Amino acid sequence: MKLDNGLYRIGNDIVAVYLVVTGDGVTVVDAGLAGHWRELIAELAGLGRFPADIRGVVLTHGDSDHVGFAERLRREHGVPVYVHSADAARARGEVKTKPSWGQARVGGVASFLWNAAGKGGLRTTYLSEVVEVVDGDVLDLPGAPRIIGLPGHSPGSIAVHVPEADALFVGDGLTTRHVLTGRRGPQPAPFTDDPAQALASLDRLAEIRAKWVLPGHGAPWNGGVQEAVRQVRESATAAARR
Image 1 (spheres, helix red, strand yellow):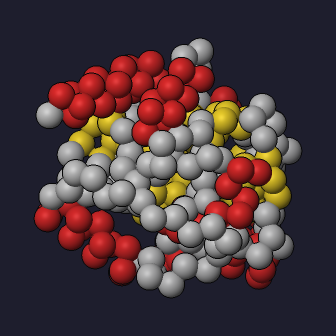
Image 2 (cartoon, helix red, strand yellow; image 1 turned 90 degrees about the vertical axis):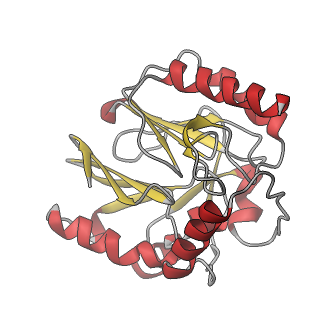
C-alpha cells in the first residue's frame, strides 16, 4: 500500500512492515511475520522491483513479530539485516522473553492471535547473522536511515528517521492500535520490558520533524511526532489512574 512518494506499507494495522523506495533501491523497516513474504514479493512486483533491489532490512527491535522474513532475505538474497547491538541476541533467538500481557480484551487478543497464526507467527525463524548498529548511526542504505536509540520496549529498541521519506519509524516505541485491547490512537505498546524507560525514551523524539509516524502495530499517523508523543503520555497517565 502506498503511503506517500517512495513510502509503502505491507501487512495491516495489527502487524506492519514498511518499504522506503528510492532510485538507489529499497530499504525495508521491520520484517513482520514469516507469512508477509508473499505480500513483500507482490508489493515489489507492483513497483517493478525484486528482492535483489533490497539493500537492507532495519529492525526496530528483535521481537518475533518484527523478525519475520528477515532471515529468508538474508539467506536467499544476501540482504544484510541491521539491529541495535543491545537486541542482537534477541534477534538471533538467543534471549527468550516472558512479557507481561497486562490489560487485554477478548476481541483484541483474538484478532492478534488469529492474524499471527495466519501469517506464520507460530514458526519464527530467527537471524543467523546481524549487522549491529548503535544510536546515531546513519546507514548507507536507500533513504540514509538514521538510528535513534529508544530503549524500553526492549533494551535495543530504536526509532528510524528517514528524512527523504518524511518518516519516523517507531517500532513498538509507541502504538496506534493496542493489539490486546483493540484501542486506537497513540498509546504505550504492550509487551514492553520497561514501561517507564519506554516513556522516558520518547523525549529523544522531541526535535524530530516528520510527516509520518509509523508504528509496528496500528494505523500510520500523520498528526505530527510531538502530538503522537503527547497522546502516548496522556494515555499512560490515564491508565495509571485506573
